[in-house]
Image (tube, rainbow, N blue to C red):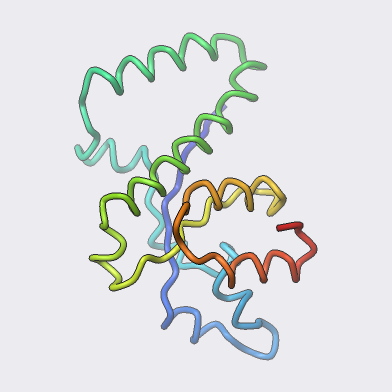
Length: 148
């Protein structure tokens, strides 16, 4: 089984170019399918480019995870949890470090997407953004029938 964590983003300009009678602004802003996926980066691509942090703690975490996924059925259930936890940690660190504020001039939300666009996506996004205004995102999720 292959699994990967992908990093992507959306911009105000990209949102405005996608708004049309067929796509509302909120859809263009929050639906991953409307994002600039051609610029999506994967953790594996970052590692292969030589930008992967090579530290003892990371290796121990990976070794522990690999021990946990010896059986394919265990791997199927473990991989999404590990990637979700990593996504939340990355989001929190981007805010804590001030990188998003420095890069974008404001503290933008980190959306922890999943395939289901469900309640877990809302909960995980809230965890990744402890002090960021998620009003617009939560409104869009609510409009699409997802409890917030």
